[in-house]
Image (cartoon, rainbow, N blue to C red; front, side, top):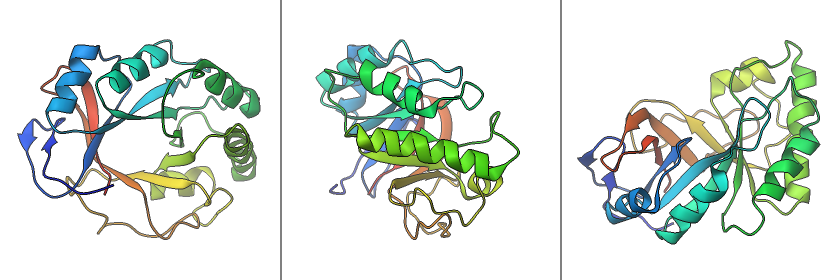
Length: 210
């Protein structure tokens, strides 16, 4: 992705440096997504699956609205560990997305109702990621170094073939803070600022995507 001078939408201020994107669990109308695109933000990741074990009912419309507004769209899924059957969760999401244009599916791995046994968590995430891959998806992992260490063990590298999107709210549009973990020696995306209402009316996080 080429770097350009852009507006960081979630902060509501003009910024320089590199390509930026947002991520959100909110449903945005076409008008709101068009506002985002016109503000200079070319990409977004929207929620596709919720921690309650269901496909997000807004994901289809959200992708359609964003894509129609010329936003490059990815999807993230917050898996439901207590619901079990990660392969079915992956299948349900991909089935719900049929007919839409999106570039990737990111698995949200953060502390929420996981097992206290790291091997059990490793097996769940492996099945989820491998199923998505087998269904033709470009797969990524959203997590932090601390969360990864707690849930699966800092050095577990079972899905290091997937892209890494990590978070650290230091308001810095760079990877200077990155420390290797989980088999990753570099990252694809950094979420550098937390949830804020954008000038276009959507609550979103700010991300760095060079």
